[in-house]
Length: 229
Image 1 (cartoon, one colour):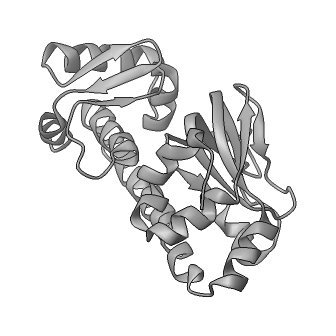
Image 2 (cartoon, helix red, strand yellow):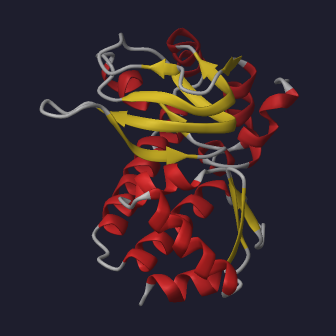
């Protein structure tokens, strides 16, 4: 099965990369390519059930809508991330929102196309099950990082989480993370100015290189040591 070459990164990294080749091809060949501008919604909390969305380039923010507060981004994600599995399982409305944090390109697998896959290959549910588990573990990692009291250690933990999302099998450092200081600060529960100061110290110690909307991780082992402080 063939798929658009713009989606090759989704074949090589993230959830699909850990599934068998025939399943990967079946998913990507049925996907539609979508482009979206920064701040536009992929879907909102309460929207009708729909299919899956895989981020090929750019960035997504996962948006929570508490009863007593304004909506906010609880997580920022990178290339290889898929979302929408809840509605695929339950066929109920969306419980979170997803919004583009920068101009992005993504794959959309409509619900009807997923249903066509499982009709032809019931074993597909086995590989689909990896996705909610993967996203649950990611949410646990983020919650654990926010429990870290030290701000430097907390930023190091968040950077390691983000690096893990985009790291393909067999790839070594350095790794580039497409995120701005403001978004990193939101994810680490810190002010943008505090994040800037911490990243400056990390750069001086040879752990990262910081550029416009990008952080390049140079020393993963060093970040692990900083996280453990």
